[in-house]
Image (cartoon, rainbow, N blue to C red):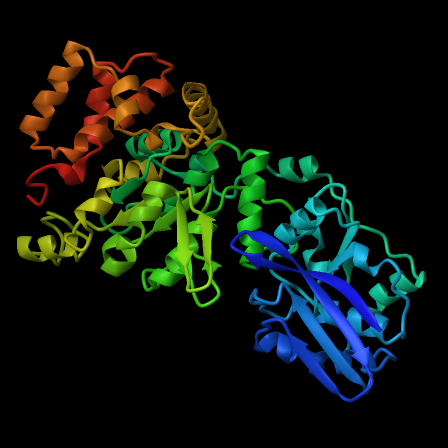
Length: 511
């Protein structure tokens, strides 16, 4: 008897429906074809034990299973449940009149219980697109898949529950989730708040500007000055995610298998990889490409602590994704593209010892050592960082002050208002949403300078020996400062403030 059941394969952040054809005939043998990997080939042992422990058998006949399309590589153990159900229906052990109306996915344990799978959300979206009635998957993944409307999503703990459903027994009900309620849940309660930060008013101002314009930022200062603490609080002042952004971000985390029994992600991601990370782990890849840290930070913040400690080739692979806001990974037989639109926040000590030009420091570095330390960061990478700010230690008077600082919610309101101005400005440009994404043509159009501002910028560039690459960055940042003040034109005070945020471009910064 020939039976068709349906599973799904995930490539990049999109799913492809897989037709599993099970044919049982006279003879003996178990033949699995259609480019399965080793995890799928081993499934026969898991399926045999799971069926036996639930009162069923793996028929002692010739079982031929084809996974179509046969030229597409299938990987992972998530097809166990699909294959098991196909074998049971094809051998006549259970009814399966409506089995072809459902997508079935799940990894089987030997007792028939189900282990979580990756990519449940893209699979559910594809199932709805292709008109399937429902989707059976492990209970652990049900919340992320149930985000999709007009699809019956069944979270099951054991193979027996699925068998009972097709046999007309049991009372398995689809999981329903109110997507909007899930999205707005706990939206206004960030884990880290700027009200906890004592002093550092100029740095907070910098963070506000960076958040308002989507600018990449680098914090330079000695150990203990508060660089990491400030960076962790940046997501709390970014504008709330839109529903579309939340779905996009959840999809990537679903593919990577990083969602832990949660539905829709409503908080912007904050990723902070260790400096020993490899370039594949950072941008994504592998023989079966998986999203890297830059894609996991999509619509959020990627924090690189101690930037010069990262291997130079690791930092260099970020240059193209920073510009294009997506990363394409090519292999011999296929190519996948992962979105990677993130804000880069980097921190570093100004010298190997961390104490730059501090006369009280026990250890200081020579100019040569400092030059070698800073040269680990290439000019083209620094070129993609709009704001450089020096962080100084907080004095005792500020630390011991009991007065509460401004909260993240208050700062976020100003940031959101500035972002709305930018949304209107770029509404006819599909790939540009905020100031940091402006190209040279848009900078000339939206950052018009009067004579005073031009003279100020000219003098600053000559006196401070600012590099040519600093020019566009200063104009972008000045445009954001103007937006925060709801000013239509960029004025000289906006230019003056933006000039301060180019520390690493100053000739002779090393002293």
